[in-house]
Picture 1 (cartoon, rainbow, N blue to C red):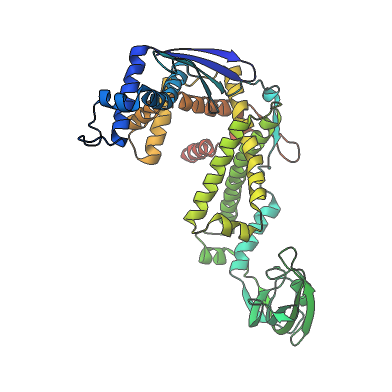
Picture 2 (picture 1 turned 135 degrees about the vertical axis):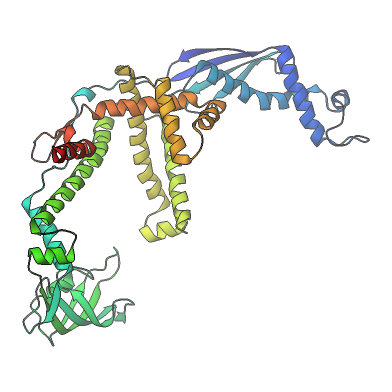
Length: 449
């Protein structure tokens, strides 16, 4: 087989493929073998009828058409691999000669992934959460621990936020009781908004024996309002434990209040670092796709959209659900779900094109060592030998696609290391502050000294 490729307008290429007579005759012979399995001739078992007899009975045209139908896609795929062309849609095939006899030549016109340019990625600036742990955040963490060990004692005063109210509650809709909204001696945390927000307004200032009635909006849009009747049976005041070294040692692994505060501060700092790392990835992707002025190619969007819908279907099945149940639960229509996923698919395609453009612009390459590291990571993740994984990708003709994915990952790493980050107050965030492993090493070295 011989093949050439030429560029066309509109992100398309034309493959010109030539198959010599001798080679295509082998394809016709294979077609006759397939026909022999399907055609029953007297005196011959299925698959055993000789080609000459089949030719006499069926003619050569049937087998040749079968050979063309089966082999042309394979020849086309071989040409794609040979020329390493990044096609993104099914080809339009046209036989130019050899439909009836002899060798075969045909053309395949196909859309390819566009190569775009992205301006301004070197000057990108993104806003991320701040890293500083405030005194208020630290106190909130301390108070949360105290609240977990609080005691509640009966009081005669009016209920307020933070108290517990023991209530009888009756919820109805249109005069009919609502299942799940009726209970006796129900312990409710005033100010929590756990049932409906309106219940807190009704309970604030209530004392034992008070009866309160009120209406509340139904949580689901379009439903009629709910009506409630609440009787207060008991008010319990929350008593927080004293913040002493003895209490801290009793309820935690910390020796004293100071050690506990220091540990909480470190934990909050790590949480903030992780929040910034996640925000950096999301904000950077959003900022980068905004720089892409080109339209996302529809074949790529459709492929990404279908992959996302398939992923949703798989996750639903793992949870014992189907799409119909999911739509009923979320109140969405199939068109709304597709439209939501389509928006995400368009952004993903634009991000893909942008990262490829950066890899080209910054001469980022995927070396053999990069590929070895990539396959080693897949080996660790899936428990399959790296060489076996590489062989499977090579056999499927996907090694070039893997190399592209590695290039994109390296381009993203390149960009992550250079993007400017500022917090909500406009202060610049030092990327080095996000390296928890380095910080741990520094702290360890400090302790050793």
